[in-house]
Amino acid sequence: MHIDLGMSSQDFRQQVLYQAPKVFKGAVKDLNITWKQINELYQRANPTDELFRLRKGEIVPISEYVESFDDMGRTRYRFIKSAIYHHMKHGATIVYNRINNEPFVDGLAKQISHFVQAPTVVSGYLAFGSDASFKSHWDTRDVFAVQLMGKKYWALYKPNFESPLYMQQSKDVDVPEPTIPDMEIVLEAGDVLYIPRGWWHNPVPMGCKTFHLAIGTFAPTGYDYMQWLVKQTPNILPLRYNLSDWESDKDNIIQACNELSAIMTDPVVYDKFMQEHMANYRSDSAFNMQLFGNANADANDIPDDALIISNIVDGRTLEKGYVIANGLKININDDSQYLLKQIMQYEPISLCNLLQVTDNSISNDVRLAIAKMAELDIIELVL
Image (tube, rainbow, N blue to C red; front, top):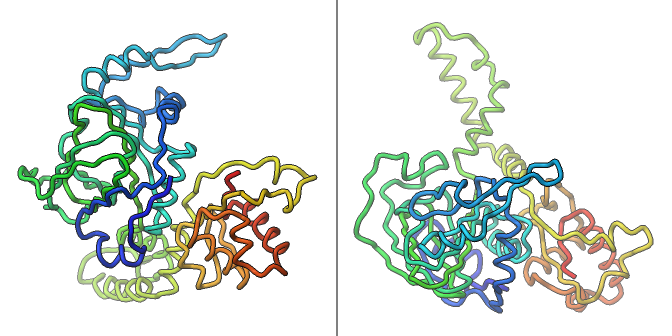
């Protein structure tokens, strides 16, 4: 499945990002989601993890659909399927937060991550009834709702609390809940809805099957920058002095503010923060033991039809001569930069197609470079 929003990442940033919700009709191309994939997604979930919940307005107590049992001397937990079926028949929604290591989910999340150049977190929502799983609320991150099966009604309301941070959820902030929608939308299979953080929304099933992924994007905020800067403040001498009273301390505080301002507005410091922020992010990717765990295998064993996907979130660092992927910062030469640009522009791109856009005389070097980048988890090979 491939997401095509019909506009470039740069145009999206200039025309849509943070401004207002936008529907991208039929944006999911080659939509081939199956019940087997959805059922296996939930089957593999941890029954006792708080990230997995049944909701019908309120959270259904876990004791109603999870049991514990002794499995040869070890306590295990399992879903009581009949209980889950009962709750779903009566309007409940299965909510599965922070899904990872699920191939079709990871693939869609990576596409959104690369498009907005920010880390992502994914939740899944499955329902058959017509009851809302939540009351109207806002999210503290931008969200792409990707409708994969059925349809769902969305009411959206303009923000009355701008750009909320993670600790400023709608249930915790004293602002009135809006009552008249500014937008009403029905998402159908293949549609994608972009919702900026702070926009109130109330998604409601429509009495038929509905399954969508909510892909939240987590670009760093100024607050994140300030938290990081606090760790640099021990180097500011006036902040190491003891405090006694305002008259005695104000000159030191003013001096400290000036020094902090100089640090905060230093582009080198800013770039260091961005590097550390991106280095904290990890991208799920598939194992290829037969290629990279096998001492007898080499780059020539990579199939020509292997699909190549980047694990780099923010490709803008390519112009600076380095990439950050899965905790590694790696300096790259011009040839590797060219290869990665081709991969990121056309991903998923097959190895044979990548070889076609490069000089035949360096095809072996390309294979070696791809093998090394895959081994380091800079790129993913889908075989």
